Image (cartoon, rainbow, N blue to C red):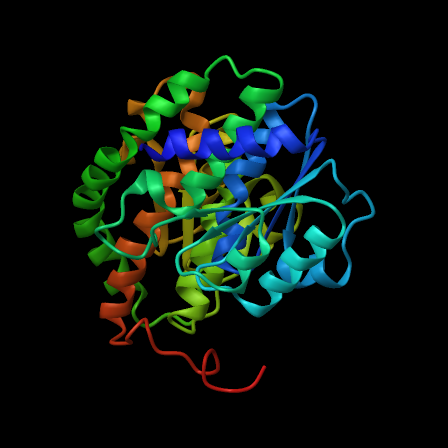
Length: 326
């Protein structure tokens, strides 16, 4: 069975028992960032169902007042992070329908009403349409389609059949560029990452998971739409800035930021454009929603790995994670 069909069936089962009015996307770290495209899609396509993102611990300790039998909680964790399992339990206790996205069975898959297995974005053999962000996006699209109709649903589901080919071509394109960028960054201690709109989640994950967690380098994330409301004051000729140019309605914000950076930033400015990664191969009326699906594995599996090699740091090393009590 294709993953698109499995996802649609799960949503159908949810809707048999619940009249959904709100969706809470709940996870931690990279899994939390992986919900971004689904949340962004629902904000811009659904007229009836409200959507919100929550990091697991916040949801567990301070669940929103609206959570009840009219809520769908999509809870994601590879192996059942403690805070995420607690959040799933809270959502279920409050009456919400719960779907777990997971890699390995854990307490999370025992708690949730439904579960869908995904493939890790960090593994080269994983299919792009089956990673967590793709499945979450499919859930959002299926939910909107089955409750109020989504005119581009069939077109979007067909796009998921194409994304893995697009990703593989993008890897070949980006690898030599990433090597040059990483060598230039090898002596840097801070790398700013910028993005906006449908690509912001990819920028966030690149900062907190790839650069900070895996390589222990400082990496503030800047929304291009907010760049001129404070962050642009840090720009100088030496500052390392990685600008993600997304495809979609907020691209003019990225372009405005780029015009400024080309004047005032130096050779450490790097631009990764979705148009060059193949996002334009998808139909214009849906391509916006696939930014994260293509950018995130490229950033993780090409750029992060290239930087790891350039600075001679194994990206599986950690200072604290899995090592000390926290």
